Amino acid sequence: MIRHLVLLAMAAALVSQAAFAQSRIKDITSVQGMRDNQLVGYGLVIGLAGTGDSLRTSPFTEISMQSMLQRLGVKLEAGSINSKNVAAVAITATLPPFVAQGNRIDVSVSSLGDSTSLNGGVLVMTPLLAADGHAYAVAQGPVAAGGLQASGQSASVSHGVPTTGRIPNGAIVERDNTAEINAIEKFALQLINPDFKTATMVADEINKFAAKRYGQRIATAHDLRSVEVIRPHDITASILFSDIGELPVNPQTAARIVIDEKNGTIVMGENVRLSPVAVSHGSIVIKVTETPIVSQPDALSNGTTTVTSQTDISVEEPNGKLAMLRGPTLEKLVTGLNRMGLKPTDMIAILQSIKAAGALQADLVIQ
Image 1 (cartoon, rainbow, N blue to C red):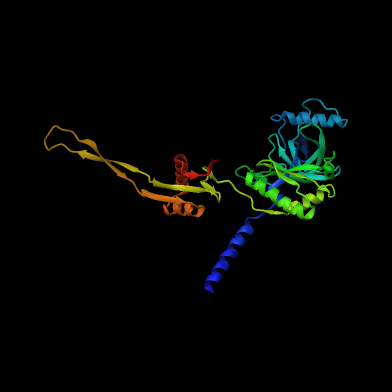
Image 2 (cartoon, one colour):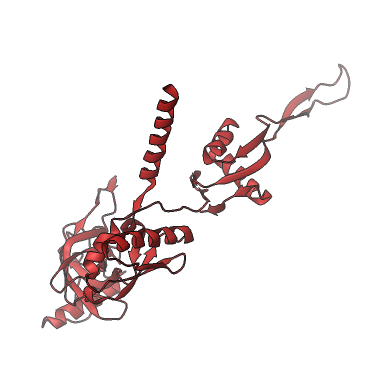
């Protein structure tokens, strides 16, 4: 009876682990062609409380102010503007797919000159351009900066970055970015993490579902990056995306170790394997000590007092260990490294040496 309970517990654990590893197809793929577009613009933020650009060090701000006022019918002579309430800024935004004319999107505002803060400013109407040179949106509104800065004669305080900010729903889309999605006859699902096995599993799961629901196979694994799907004639593309996006798949991960040498972070994938290898790691410490010695001449002699030195050299090798690492699994590999009492920097050096020796069966990515 106890043996049956143990087997049932083990089976339940395996089932829970498999279910935990499953991901929806829409979480590990994206539809080819359905992507965001980046927008950028140049404009002016007005209404600042003396924290704007200095016109002497930022001449483009003065030129932009004159151009804006001339378009509004105000003519000014060069050098006649002397204001600290205006800042030149760059505006960036992301245009999502299938956005129609009249929709609103968020924009980010960043100072280009020597402005110290954009708090309290208002962005003047600015067109936002895409890579094709066309304006797809127009931005305007009060800037919500995320930082603050204050200073006096003897002290100053700052928090966050007051020279950048956002305008929620600050841009209105002026050009449609829509397409007739339901007219698509064939499309491709792009894998976020390319893998031949994962692509095959995605195609198999879609075909299993389509065979029961539509009575035909509609998916083919094209390569490690994409799966081609043919839309059935009696179903719309929107419904098809909704149906196949919820299908569960166990995506395969590459055997990879990512190392960030700046902060000593090490991230290992589940499929990392290590061939049996002996590792010795220790640091040699050499200490050189100079001891001054005073030499006194004998009494009633003509000698002089001199100072000499005595040199003592010692060599130590603390924590020098030889360990046998057998890492058929990630857990055993990490356990073996931890038992050696290593710091993250020492682990990085050992992993690089093991990879060079050919015993590490994984990609080593160093950032």
